[in-house]
Length: 122
Image (cartoon, rainbow, N blue to C red; front, side, top):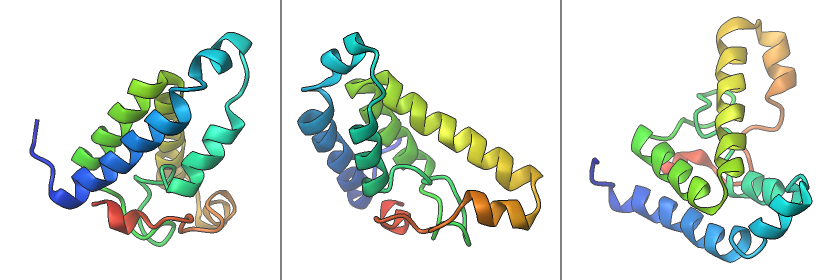
C-alpha cells in the first residue's frame, strides 16, 4: 500500500471519524430495518464524498487513487452499503461523462462543486 501524503491521510481520517461518530452507532438499526440511510447519504454529500472521481468542469478535480481507496475502505468499514453507494455513483458518473453529450451532463451534474471541494482531497 502506498504511503499517503499528510493531506490525503487527513482526508481519510476525516471520513474515518465521521464513520465512527455517525455510521457505526446506527448501522445495525438501519440494516435490520431495511431502511434507506437518507441522513447518512446527505452527510456524505455534505462531506464531498460523491463526485470524488469527477473531473473539471463538473467538479474541481478528481482525487488521487490512494485517496479514493482510503475513503472507500473507511466507508466499507462502517457499512459496506455506503461504499457501494459511492462506488455506484462513480460508475454511473463515469459512464455519463464518457457517453453522453454536454446537455445531459449539465443536467446530471448540477451544482458542482459540492459543498466541500474535492480539490482539498488529493
